[in-house]
Amino acid sequence: MSQNVYVFSLETIEKMKQYYHKSLTTTPQGAIFRAKTSNSVITAYKSGKVLFQGSKPEVEMKLWTDNTTIGTTKTAPKKPTQSTKYSPPESLFLSSHIGSDEAGTGDYFGPITVACAYIESSQIPILKELGVKDSKNLTDDTIGKLATEIAKMQIPYSLLILHNTKYNKLQKRGWSQGKMKAMLHHHAIQNLLKKIGSMELEGILIDQFCEPGIYQRHIASEKGVLPDNTYFMTKAESYSIAVATGSIIARASFVREMDKLSAQIGIPLNKGASKKVDLTIARIMKEKGEEILNSCAKVHFANTQKAKNYL
Image (cartoon, rainbow, N blue to C red; front, side, top):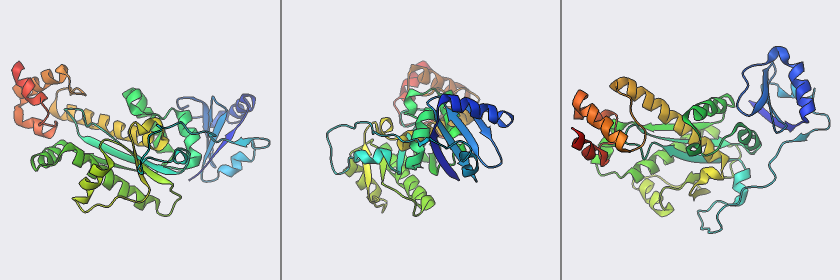
């Protein structure tokens, strides 16, 4: 699906809205309008940027693109000055690249979800307009809406879910959570590399949760090899739209899985690992039995023992 971003005056955007009044659909966050024609989906944002996407976007673009400019981001955000061979070049943030992040690792209940997304350089401005950023700074409701908008853009991604039953089996086999995360990132990236084939790729950025050397040892222990031009960076979702996109996809998936588990258990499951979680664990133990935790929780967390104080 072809996608193009142009910048228009707000006056022109208002004319566009009137022109497409019979084709208007639900307006996404941060937008003035969205219209769907037989040729293209047109989304106009408050900043003046307009996204044309679909099978024949050029048909609609030609109606409006006299004396306009293609929307681009001219400067990349500054990254920390300390660098190693695994630190991403600043050019990466404005280039076509893969970003990978995870959710659920610090939560007692629920799985670990890892998602990586491939973002073309032309898509970066529009994703910023949508409000894509670190999922930790967004409400779950906003994350769900953004995940829907990302899906509409048909962005290539790979999502892996490590459910609690398998998580607990791996933990008993001696796998650290760090190794689990490394293997999830590695397999998600491998899946996505197959999807995008020979498309332009400046590099791969992983939100750093351990030292790169340790990450490499984890994947090497399972015969994995680090792809070329793979970089690591803490708080990468604040600099890379690709990582932020992966973060949102992973978090949206984690929230869905938590809702499913709550329905299956018949008790609302709390996120995080607080005292409220301990009280919920105690309730589950009383009403359902301790064994059921294996299917919905990371049972090696200290919360399991803390909860017994409330029995």
